[in-house]
Length: 368
Image (cartoon, rainbow, N blue to C red; front, side, top):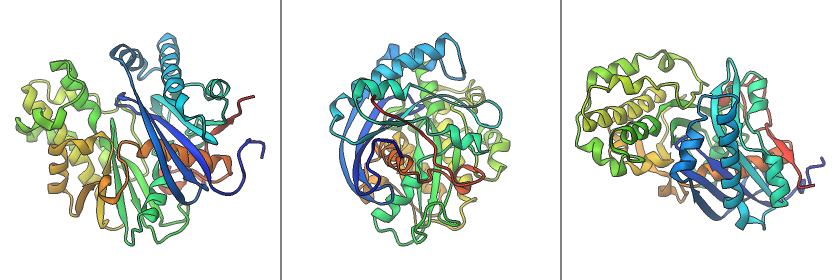
C-alpha cells in the first residue's frame, strides 16, 4: 500500500479540524481499526487570534489569489502549533480550512498543505478528503457521517438516531445502527440542514463586536419576526431532496431579511431560522430517530436548543448525554477517516454525499 501505516489492527490517529465558524483548531486522538472505535484519547485546542480570523475570513468565497495564499499560511502555522504535542500517534487526519464550496460548479477548496505538515511533523498525514468525492459527482460534504455511524454503534444505539452538527453550517446524519456497513443501503442519510451559527456570529460581530451570542442571551431578549422566517423557509434549498450541501455564505442574504430589526429581534430570528432549517430537514429522514444528539457550538446555545426541542418530534440532547465530546467530534471524525483512507475503505457514499459510488477520499503524504 505504501502509506507507511499498518494495514491491519488498531492504530492511534489524531484528527485536526478547523470549521467555518473560525473558532480555532481542534485536535483529538482516536484508536480505531477503521471500522470500530476502540477508545478516545486526549485532545487539544489552539484558538485563532482576531487578526488570524480576519485573514482567513478574507479568503471566504475565493478560489485563488493573495487572500487564499495568506489564509493557507495562517492555517498551516496554526495546525503545526496545535499538532506539535501529538507526535506519539501513527497518523494525522488534516481537514484544512474550507474557503469555498460549490461542488456543482467550481468544486471545493480546503487550504493547508498536508505534505508540508507531514514533513514538519515527521508523521504520515491524510488530507484533501473532499476532492475525490466531488470529482465523482458527490457534494463533498458532509464527511463525518461514517464516523457518526461508528459512534452510534459504539454507544450501543439499538434504534435509528440522528447526529446534528451545528457549526457555521448545520448538518444532520440519520443512522440505522442495525446496518453494520456504513456504505450499505439504509445505513445512513446525511445532508446540510441550512445555516447555523455563521449568520448569528456575523450579525453580533457586525453590530456589537462580539464573536458569538454567548448563552443565547441576545436572542432570548428578542422576538422572532415570523415574516422573515417565512421568507427564509421559502428558499428552494429546503425543498431539494438530499444529499445536498451548502457553503458558509450560501444564505448570506439572511442578514438582509433582519437588517431593519433590533439587535435582539434580529438575533432571535436568525436563531429561529437555524432551528426551522433542522425541522425541515427531519422530514427527509427515512423514519423518526429515537433522539437527536447535538454536537458543535450550537449545542451551547440554550435558546437554540429550546427551539429545537419545541420544533422536533423527538428527544433532543447534546452528545455529552451519551458520553461523547461535542467539542471534539469533528476532529475525531477526521482521525477516523484518516485510518479508513489509509486502509482503502470508503469515506462517503450515495446516501451521504450523492457520490455515484462509495469512495475513499484523501491524499496520503509521508514525512519523507
